[in-house]
Structure formats: C-alpha cells, structure tokens
Image (cartoon, rainbow, N blue to C red; front, side, top):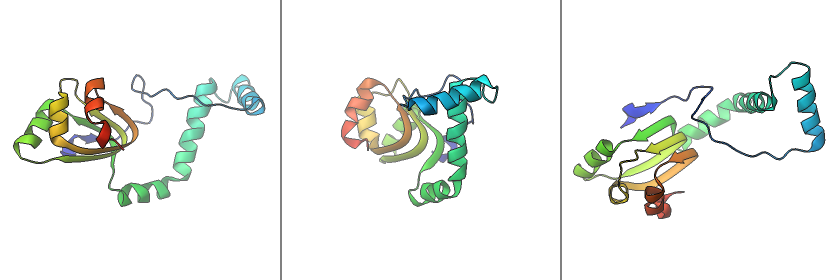
Length: 140
C-alpha cells in the first residue's frame, strides 16, 4: 500500500482546498501595499508565500512530528481494488495522512466500513458523502 503515497507538489492548481482567513484592516492594508508595489501578484500569492515560509521555518519540528505520529506525507489514494484486496486478506487499515487522503468514488460504504478501522487526516479527506457518513465514527 505504501507504493501509492506520492509527495505533494508545492503548487496545486486544481487540487486545492479553499479556506477563509479573517485579517485586521491594518494587516490587509500592508498586504495590499506589498501587492501594489509589485512584491506579490495578489493577496493569495502573499498568503501562500507566508504560509510556505512558516512551514519551512518549522520544517524540523514537522518532520519529527510526522515520524512520531507515523503519518504518510503527501497524497494517499485508495481504489476499490486496493480495499477489496485488503478485505480478501482479512486486514483492516488505519489511515494516517498529512496531506490528502482520497477514497475512490466507486468504493461503497459497506466496503469502506469492512476495510477501514480508522482515519486521521491532517489536510483533506476526499470521499463520497456516503462513505464519509459510513466512516463518521472512525474519522478523527
């Protein structure tokens, strides 16, 4: 299963998660000034750069935490075939991801419940609403 873990790319075009950030007017004004003076192309560019700088600043602490918590870093995708093989082997998964965990659209809620013991995702989980509902008691 570890063969389907892929590192995240620094910039994800269509594969991003939208978040809302509330900023004070003075902070927003500083950002707009930097954009106006050409340091950044827009507010989003500034915010992404600031986030990446903070992630880089804390990279060693993050690396240690990922190792300590036994997280898979990047993208982890589970196809129907993967989960059917897990069920056939009589096993169950404890999914622990920092990044994106995705469960294929053709995975039934019954197959997901039979094969996934727990899910812990720091980032985003992509799965059908029915699968998310079926696994609600297992998602941390």
